[in-house]
Image 1 (cartoon, chains in turn red, orange):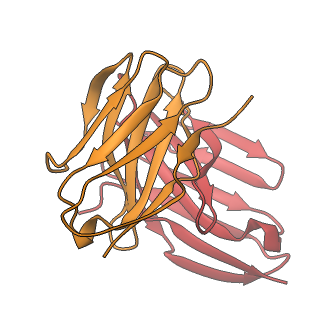
Image 2 (cartoon, one colour):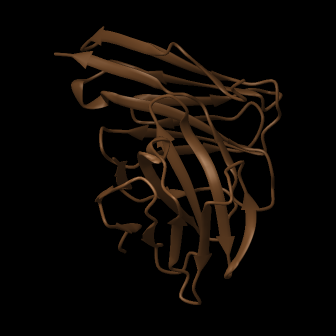
Length: 112
Length: 112
């Protein structure tokens, strides 16, 4: 049983479209991170959210942390081919030490 | 500032052998964590080292072990390799082990 669920699992869209990816759990996280990973490479950190209800914007990417700190969403506006990749959410269950639980990921393909 | 460096990038080993992977964290980071990534199980936490001590441990058999040196560099060892150990092994470093983690490019291990 996955502690963190992500949906959708796969997403293929045209350049210029908007999309939202979801990360859900029944557990409460002290913080939650979003990563993007390209084939054969390590995940690259996009954002960390800590406070329930927090919203962070990075250019065309908007991240939201649920009020109860159990879920999060990533919204991409006007997707570009360079956004293609595996998007992973990772939750930290502890304030002591690095022990992240990762979701299975959403594989996004943005077609030109 | 140099990122997280993992060596080697690729390894091919035979069943029953043992292997050692290396990770150099970002300068000043004291926490190093190891993850295994496979298509079926996704990213799974192996263990975390902080100041040369194992601070957190995932749910992997004792064949998987690690250590951290005084300069924060870390090694991971897998003994008696099995075919199922074939995976991308990722190392992540963070300042104190809380919050943001930065990943290396990984070591792709193939067991034949």
